[in-house]
Image 1 (cartoon, rainbow over the protein chains, first blue to last red):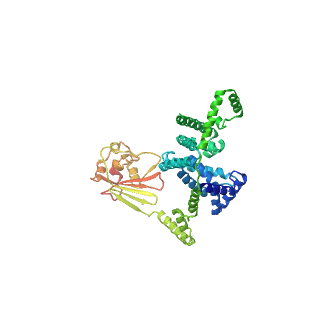
Image 2 (cartoon, rainbow over the protein chains, first blue to last red):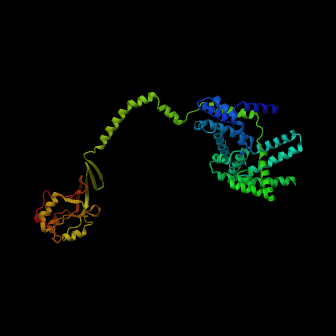
Image 3 (cartoon, chains in turn yellow, orange):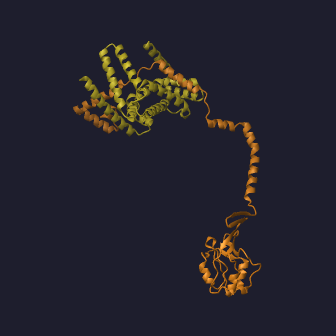
Length: 217
Length: 255
C-alpha cells in the first residue's frame, strides 16, 4: 500500500512541471501570475509542484514531522500573501526557498532553539516508531538497525549545531545549493557561509566519530 | 580540509596546490578521506516519506485560509464608512457652513474689547486695545522730609534709565516746571511697585513744610501706569489717592 501511494505520488510529480528544468521554472512563473490574478487552482498547482521539496527542507531544518507540516503550511500562506512581490524574471524556487528558510528560522527563534519544543515528546516517540518500523520491514535486520542508529546520530549531531551553522550546512550539503545561493538566502556573505559550513562539518565529524566509534567498540 | 571535503576551496591556484599535496602525502590523503566520509553521513539525514495524506492536509488548510472572506480591519471599516458617497455629499454641503462659522469666530474673538478690567487686591489692570493701564492703589509713600536728595535715597528702587522714555504726566511735568529750583519731592512708590520719579528738580532743594503738609496723612498714593502701543513709551502717573487737590498747587507751596 505504501509503495502504491509512493508510485502515485511520483506519477503526480512527473506530470507536473519539472521544477529544475527551464520549462518548469517558466511554467511556475506563469502559474504564479495566474495565482496573483486570483486563480486559486493555479496556486494549488504551485503547491503540488513544490510541496515535497518545501517539506523536505523544513524537515531538515526543524527536525520533526509536525514542525515540518506547520512550516510548510506557513510557507505557502506567506507565499500567497507576498505573491505580488514575486517578479516573473526571478527564480520561483529560490524565492520559495527564501520564504521556507525564513519561516523555519522564525519557528526556531520562537522556540528559542531547536530543542526543546512542544513536539519534543511526540517527535522522540515518532522517531522510535519509525526506526522500529524500518528495522522490522528490512530484509537484513542487523544492517537496518545499524543504519537507523547512524541516522539517529547524524540527526542528533545536527541538532547540536547553532541555528546558522545548521541552516548553512543543510542548504549547502543536503539541498545542494551553491555557496552564493546559500549566502543570498541567509542574507550574508559567501565567506561567512564558507566559514559556517566549515565549522559545522568539523563539529559533525567530531560528534559522529565519537558516537560511532563508541558503538563500534 | 572541511572546505575541501565539500569542494568549497576558493581560488584555482589553492585548489591545485592542495590537490598536488594530497597526491603526495598519504597522511593528508587519509584525513581528506575521513572528511569526505563524514560529509557523506549527512546523506543519512533524509526526510521521512511524507504520504499523500500529509500533503493533502496542508493543501486543504492553505486553500481554506486563502479562500476565507477577509474581515476588514477597524481602519478599513472606518474608511469605508467615511468614504461612502452619501457621507461625502453631506460633508461637501457642510464644509462651507463650517468654514464660514470658523471665519466669523476668528474675527469675533480677535477683536479685543474696549476695556477689560482685572481687579486683584490693590491693583487694577485695564487693557484698552494694545495699551495697558495699571492702577495701583494704596501705594505707600515714604515720609517726605528733608531734601529731595534725602527722599530720593529713601525710595527704592530707582528708575532704570534705558532706551524707554518715561513720559511725565502733564500735571507732574507742570509741577516740576513751576517748582523749578525750589525743589520738590514728587513722590515715590513703595518697593512693591516702585518707580522713583523726579525730573528737573534740584536735589538739594528743601522740602517746604507746607508742601509736606498738603500730602495725605495716610501716606497713600495712587500710581497709574499707562503702557502705550509703543513698547518704549510708558506713562506713569503718581497721584495722592485721598485729598486730591482740586487744582494744581501753586509753585510757592514747594518752596
